[in-house]
Amino acid sequence: MNIIQAIILGLVQGLSEFIPISSTAHLVFASRWTNIYDGNAQQITATIAVLQLGTLAAVFVYFASDIWNISSAFIRDHWALLTGKRGMRFSGTDGVRPIWLSSESWLGWLIIIGSIPIGTIGLIFKDFIEGEGTKNLWIIASMLIGIALLLALAEKVGSQRKDMKHLGVLDALVVGFTQVLALMPGASRSGSTIMGGLFAGQKRETAARFSFLMSIPAITASGLLELREALHILPPDSFVPLLVGTIVSAVVGYLAIWFLIAFLRKNTTFIFILYRLILGTLILVLLWQGILDPKA
Image (cartoon, rainbow, N blue to C red; front, top):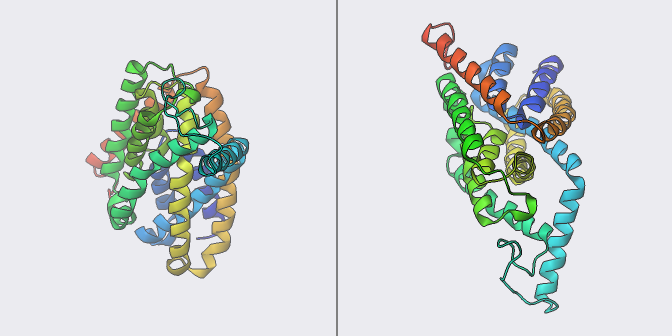
């Protein structure tokens, strides 16, 4: 992989990781177009996971104050409980939060709870996720269309009344299990989790913010795990280009987060639903006509 290929992949990763259009689908096409590693599935998967560290950095920078508030409150509240300065009461605030926890530390617990499904299933199916099956265009096209239809349904039936302070365990579990769909190529982590948030009754902006915060443990774990393995399976001359691509994905990812949150304050996800439907249908037609090779 050279620097030009890395910049292209970084641009695609940064744009598509947070916009609900599936980063995997676009990176698979980008990796085919640039022909990195001659189509080696394991090396491509490792490259994508490392590039995700760039978009993870974008989340840390954009939500730096939120992350600091959540972390400090989590430590403070639990230290107060352990030292007996605060009793454990479960009467709750807004019907969802134990009263002994601040809203910030409660959000920390929700992120932990919501991360359990993808962490567990991701480890169990790690070999499959890294294999050629996750690059199959039939699966990618089907998931592009399937999640688009579910996202449209979530837009239709979701009450869209919950702010961040109203989130509870049910929200974490719904979003957590929909995040598991992101293990399938073409689903989109942000698309799946925003869909889950809408089904749980969250406002669009709330669903997006919670989606991004929920992505931190999953992207961190997969990125660091793949980074360790990438040291052994990627060619030595690919690490400088990979660093450049990761920086590009971080900058573009930050802008993508800013754009999506601002966009969802006043707009629905319809434009992304339409894009997914068109792209998924186009891929299926090209596959059916034999123009695209599903595994190439």
